[in-house]
Image 1 (cartoon, rainbow, N blue to C red):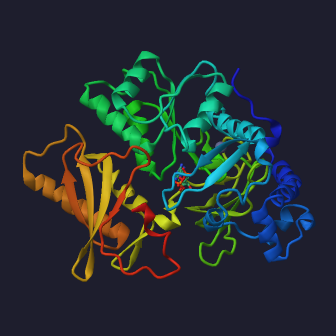
Image 2 (tube, rainbow, N blue to C red; image 1 turned 120 degrees about the vertical axis):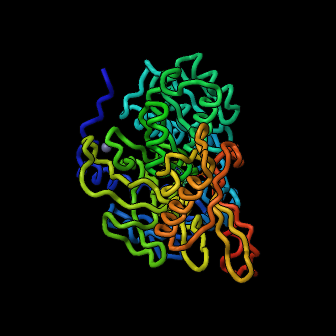
Image 3 (cartoon, rainbow, N blue to C red; image 1 turned 180 degrees about the vertical axis):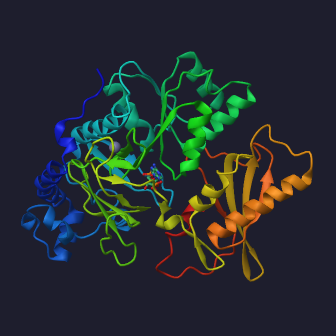
Amino acid sequence: MGFVPPPEWRDPEAIRAKQSELLPQAVRRAAQSPAYRKKFADAGLDPSSVRGLDDLRRLPLTTKEDLRREMPYGFLAVPLREVLRMHYSSGTTGIATAVYHTRGDLDRWAECCARGMQIVGAGPEDVFQNMMGYGLFTGGLGLHYAAERIGCMTIPAGSGNTARQVHLLRTFGVTVIHILPSYAARVLAYCREQGLDPAGDLALRTAHVGAEPHSEDTRRRIEQAFDIKVYNCFGLSEMQGPGVAMECEAQDGLHVWGDHFIVEILHPETLEPLPEGEEGELVLTTLTREAMPLLRYRTRDLTRLIPGICPCGLAHPRVARLTGRTDDMIIVKGVNIYPLQVEQVLMRVPEFGSNWQIVLETAGELDDMIVKVELRPGVGFDDMRELDALRQRVIQDLRAELLVTPKLQVLEPNALPIAEGKAQRVLDNREQPEPDEEAAGDKHGSG
Ligand code: ADP
Ligand code: ZN
């Protein structure tokens, strides 16, 4: 009855052979765009000399700055009349860029997302509520078409309006959702405020979560509270949107669909390839996209390749949970910090709820880092000394993880703002020095 993956998905050699066959075609398609014609000429590369996977490293890298420079149509590789849709990246780290889709691209995008839903058991029996924003953001439409393709009754709820979301979940016996992990925390808090049992009163079975970094402890919290399985789902507008890599039952890394994308992990500074297992920048090549093929695209996301074949048997390469983006990194008192490190410490503390924020201030010559976190609803302290002891313990754990001693503010539930879309974890109120020319325009957009 269930979904049976085709045999070639279990064979790493078959996947590599497919990539070798598709790469030269992808390069030839890319060469139809003015931007790649220029890039190939600059690199002295004859696109027809690319014969297979062994030629991958001869291709120039593509960056977000390239996309911005060539807006709106420089990377378009087909006549406009073949384009059915455009999406805009969320613009989390600066000016948004446009991505185009032919009919075939939309079809394959739905296929990639559908696979990820099917390998964890979704099918026609399921009722799927999509709680991602619809519109220019790719988060919504990606899994929407996938769910319809595999026959789920699909509820296009979109983002926000938590009361209505919960009403829909209950009324229609929703079994599968797609949701931002930060918003799942909000839905959970709402259920508790309303006296609902998020496990017993809902029929949920699985959640696909993604679009923003989150820790393993955050996943476990959502799983335990709703009594469901939570699967990580990764994607970016430039590649298509969600469904570039999705987790299987093993929950040990995300499978990147090898017949559509090539994965490389490069050292973020030297850009040298890193050995399997070492963390670096994720670089992706589209193999099948028509409207806007991208070659060796620097995602700026950090992860590592997981060696070996997955316990689920699929040979599509696996990347580990993403730890953030190179441009998420904040420098506090000269130390490099990724917001996810803070989340990892906070989400291990059962007294804390799931909403948190980092505020950076200038204090004289130094930076002040203030970590704000809410108490879980229902948690109280009779004796303030207990709360103080907890605070001291968490500050020590944060210092051990970050090598910087932050201040810690423990707040009442719902004290922190909730973002409409992706959570805004860092508020940088520091006085900024004059930006040097290279860094200008790009670095400070995510604060
Ligand atoms: P923007 O780059 O402007 O946020 P997108 O909506 O295309 O626009 O977002 C893609 C980015 O979101 C990825 O590059 C990555 O940084 C982040 N992201 C997506 N899915 C995940 C995930 N499962 N875990 C961590 N980060 C994710
Ligand atoms: Zn697997």
